Amino acid sequence: MNKQTKFQIKLIAKKNALESMIEDAVSHINDDRYPSTKEFFVTQKIKYEAQLDIVNQIINDYLNN
Image (cartoon, rainbow, N blue to C red; front, side, top):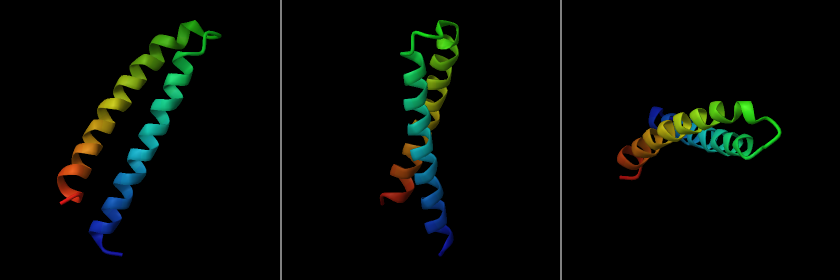
């Protein structure tokens, strides 16, 4: 496997992991059993979405040419 293929696989894995973490954070935000943790998960969701945007930009700019 060449370096570009490894890089692409790592980016796609990172993208999938971030999407999963966002879904998990949303499920915790919507869970009314623990209202004290809601703000923490909102912050985490925003952080993960920002990271996902960067990963998507890299994928679009460098790998979809």
